[in-house]
Picture 1 (tube, helix red, strand yellow):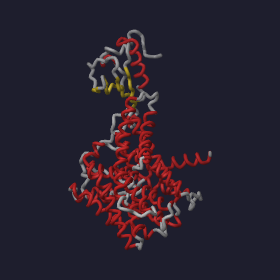
Picture 2 (cartoon, helix red, strand yellow):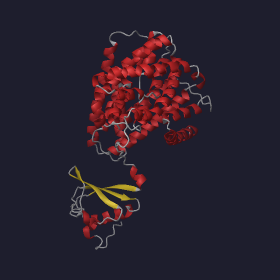
Picture 3 (cartoon, one colour):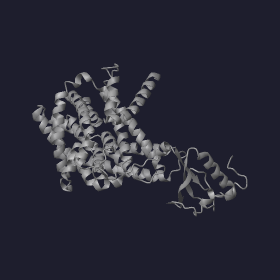
Picture 4 (tube, one colour):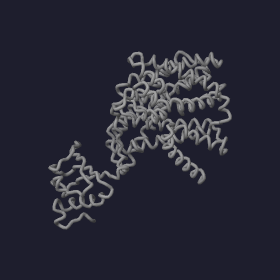
Length: 490
C-alpha cells in the first residue's frame, strides 16, 4: 500500500510538471500523460494492467468529474447565444458523422455495416478534457468557443447511447431513436432540476466550514449522474447540465468552488490518461496504424466537415468559422473509453477498434491540437491588436504578494459610525468593496461604516499584520483607538 501511494504521488507530481513542459513545447499535456502511462506499462517498466472492465469503470468516473468541471466553469452568458448551434453539433452532427464514417469504413476497410457504424459512433465524440484544455488558450472569440464547449459537454450522451445500441447483440428497431430522445430529454431535465435544487439548498445552508461548499457542489453533480442513470436517462447529460446550472448560480464561496472543481478536473484528466496509457499495448498499436490512419482521414477530411456543414446550415455560420469548428473536433480519452464497451461485450473486432482509436487519438491530438492557433490566425479569426477576454483569477493575489481580508462589522462594534478615512489603514492596504444589505459598492473616504457591513480589504503580505491590528483596535476603541493606547494587539 505504501509503495502504491508513493508511485501515485510521484506520477501526479510528474504530470503537474508536464503541464508546464507541454506549454513550452506547444503540445497538449494530455499526450504527456498518455506517455507517462505507457512508460509505466508492460513495454517499459513492466507493470501489467489488462482489466478492460475496470478501465472502463474508472474512465467513466473520470469523465463524470471532467464534465462536472466543464459545466461549473462554463459561463452561460458565453454559450447562450450559441445554444442552438451547440445542440445541433451535439446531435445532428453526431448522426451525420456516424453515418458518413460508417459508410466509408464499410467500403474502405471491409467492415460489416454494424461494425462500421460502431467505429463511426466511437469516433464521433469530441473530448471535453481536450477541448477545455486546448481551445481556451487559442484566442478565438466566444462565438466559436461557446458552441464547441457545449458540443464537447453534451455529445458524450448521444454517442454513449449509440455505442451501447450498436455494441449490443440485440437488433436495432424503429424504437431506438425514440429511446435516444427520451434519454437525452430526461437526462437534461434531471440535471436542470437537481442543479436548481442544489443551488437553492446551498444558498440557505449554514455549513460550518468554507471547504464544505465545494464538496457539496460536486456531490450534487455526482448525484445528478446517479439519478439520471437510475431513471434510465443519460447520466452524462444530467451531470453536465447540473454543473452548468450550479456554475452559473449565485453560490456561496463560488470562487472556492470553481477552484476546487478545476483541481478535481485536472486530477481526473491526469488519472484517466495515465490509466489509458498504462492499459495500452504498444506492440499491438503498430498493427492498428493503417486502419487508424484510414479512419482518421475519413473522419477529419470528410465526416467532420460534412456533419458541421449540415448542423450549421440553419444558423448561417460563415465558412471560415465552419472550417475552424470542423478542425476543432478534438478527440481524447472519451473515444478510448467508449471503445472499451464493445470489447467488454466481446464484439468481434473490438480489440482492433480499441487499438486503432488509441493510435488515432495520439495522431489527431498532435496534428489538430498543435495547429489550432495557426489555423485561427490563417482564417483571420484572431485579429492582432484586438482586445481579448481578460482572465480573472482570484489566485493571482498569491503571485502579486497580496491578500484579501474579509471584515464583518458585528453588533456593538466601535467600527460602526467610523468614516473610512478615519480607519487610517497602514500603507499597502485599502478597502476595495463594502457590502451593505446585499448591495456592494466601492467606498469613498466619506463612506461611513455601519453595523452588519462587510468589507473586503486588499493588502500586501507585509502589511497584513499591521492591517489586522488596526482593524481590531478600531473595533474595540473606535476612531480614537491610538489616542487611547489601543494598538490592536490581543
